[in-house]
Length: 414
Image (cartoon, rainbow, N blue to C red; front, side):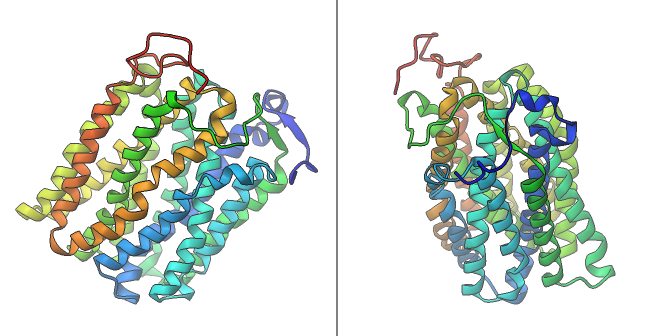
């Protein structure tokens, strides 16, 4: 297999390596590398497509539908890890994301943006699939919530650096879309290449199944993933687009909001990890979904009752903080899963998460043209459905106790 030529070392043995060469440090570096491209792409996208390509709501819906197709096909990772080690695949995917981001401004047309977005999306979704798998394989269960919180904070810190430089430099130095996309994309490529050559290949404690895995006892996890994907798509596609289209926010203003958002995430992510460890997955997820219902209803109120930009900006920051609680969904699965199922189920879960993402953006893009408030109303309904599903998570989930309907019974094979 590709990567077998490199040094192989178990995760347990890796604890004897210098701190900077351990698996956790690799996860932190990868978590920081991804946002340098994705945060820049997200910060500039809405202004870029409106100013340079004259997008409307339908166009942005189509763009995000194309962006989510690779997520729907994430189960292709199962086939890839037969010939490529997960660690190598994750880093190569980061390089693909970085390259596509770097050349985004070279193709300022509808077709050109669809092409670069598709390439970047393949890199992003394959990286995210592998990254989630490696996190759950390499991090012990007893330390998972807190460690995932710190990894989330590292990603937020990288986004903070990207957004901070944009806020300070966009007008002061007359930065261009092309320059910023190039710097962000190539920074991701540089870090990924460093990780590719600096780190040995880490072996997880349990060999992973390399076939398609779909188990009945994971049904609640699959359902929560589906609802999460549908709900999050509405936020990703339309929340920032609304602030540019309705309130005319400029690049440096929108980026300042993103910066504030990631300052909050960087500060609170470790606290969120502690809260999940202290209060459990069910309470954390129920709190998240109840908060999201209120936030999406308030988004709709901006259109129906004329509430202003300040509220929209505050809701955007709160929205991201609530979404950070989604790390509880990872730790819930880690507790109920067979260790060998983590890699293939990460791929299957990503596909399930993106089922709605393939058709919702363009369909809701047309609804947006007629009634933007209804788009956020649908998101509130989805969040309420997620809340009801989260009530089915046991207080102490484990294999054989995946839902409240079970009481520690032996888990079925399928």
